[in-house]
Image (cartoon, rainbow, N blue to C red):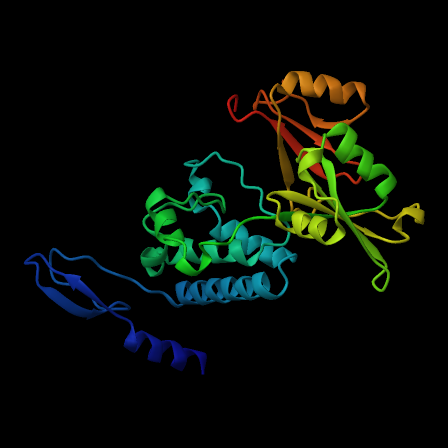
Length: 303
């Protein structure tokens, strides 16, 4: 049965080969010999076995990459498809993918295999180590012009959940210099909101309704949200976005002098992620609030 199958397969394995005169000649590639000046091709049964076993194993690795990305077979798949030139020593870059590849990285693996399918979407750029840099032309095409219906939209607030307002409120007011624009308590939901911002005291209305409207219309405010009772839970904490899996990064505060601001922060016992002269990005710093959220301290004229 196997011999018959290979004979049938051999009967359909034909290739176009050009002879000395440049004309294409159809020939079986298993047994026959080409005219003088041509080449003899041999397609052994053992080679077919190796070929189909290799295809089968690659197909199995591909399936495992989709259904079980942490398996050894999926790791083999990524090793075969991620950096083929790396085997030849053409690329010395160390690729360090996450243990569980996201859909974003899977998409780029597909782009690497069949890039011509994605040229209308991506333009002609090289995907390297699962990273991508968008060209300015592509960015311009992606963003376009804002819709006329959004002309009155503006950015108003960023909400951060806090564990204990007795620690967070002094930090944002006494350390960072913000003012409390409005406190809103919701007994039914068992939570409070504290709207913080950089406003002069005489700008903040005294009436309750006016102050509420002021807090909800001022640009670039921080909305600190306290869910009642979290302050009494010793082991409770919020994810700050900079632990795995990472998401939210930081907020940014502009100061006149980064060095002087950080000297003051240090005297006040503020926790630093990065001081102004640390690392390769000089002149800016990162500090943490009581819940561990990162805050960038910078001066736009010095970055």
